[in-house]
Image 1 (cartoon, rainbow, N blue to C red):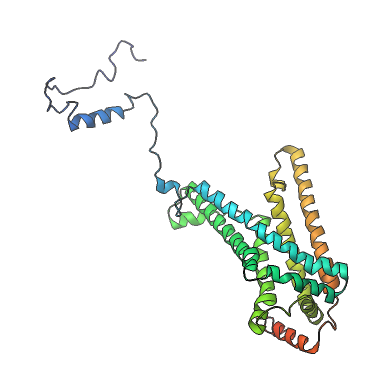
Image 2: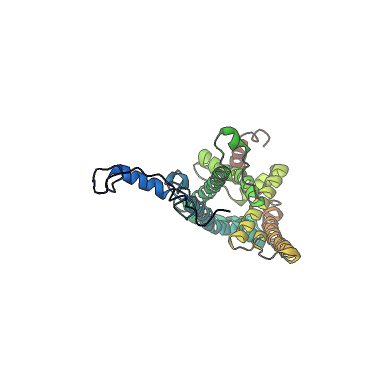
Length: 323
């Protein structure tokens, strides 16, 4: 143990003699050497009782390529992904009413088709269709992909991975069931729009002749492909929409705050509720779609209508030869 009367480390420092009054002395307060020595002394751990602090990161290490803070970019992408679903939800309300509820109520494809053709111009116009369908879907998909890439880059930064081999060892964010359903839904929606919107627009200049009777004719002529495709589109789509709605409302199982057995039971109950609502909506949609439209395809069109419908189905890439 050191003697308290012994000279301290500060008093034992050797100082070069210098004139007290010389303004040009190396240790003069106004000289550059004195400023440097003062800076060195202030950084010495023996002269400063405060803990040494690392330099603050520069803006390049705390900002993204867009110039946004990582947390700001995350919130922006989440907001885009969330609010882009609102216009599409309005479109789905029209769509399930026209393609399932009205056929279920009328039990007549001609009557239900007249309602569809009457209301469809409102949400398939040149202004409303991109606003309600195309732009929201593109925003939702691209923001989800960008959010996944952004989280991957944050993981690489946290691990301090610099080389390519180190970055490869950093795992990608785990895909949730909701994300998997979304990625599966995209090709189904794209295929549905291609057959019912793009092909009629290219072959006939519009989709005025494509309605419930066109879909019913496809069910009657190609029942296996039509039933499997319709069931996959409705099932995956409804589970994704219902699960996403529960997540935005913070009613999904991952938002259970309680722990232990009670928390697990509560999370399991929430999952059952979400699955039950999704099953009810999907069942209702299929009841009108498969139960009414899917079974009423024989004799629903005239000769020239059937010829035009067959031409559209034969123009489908890959599957057109089978149709």
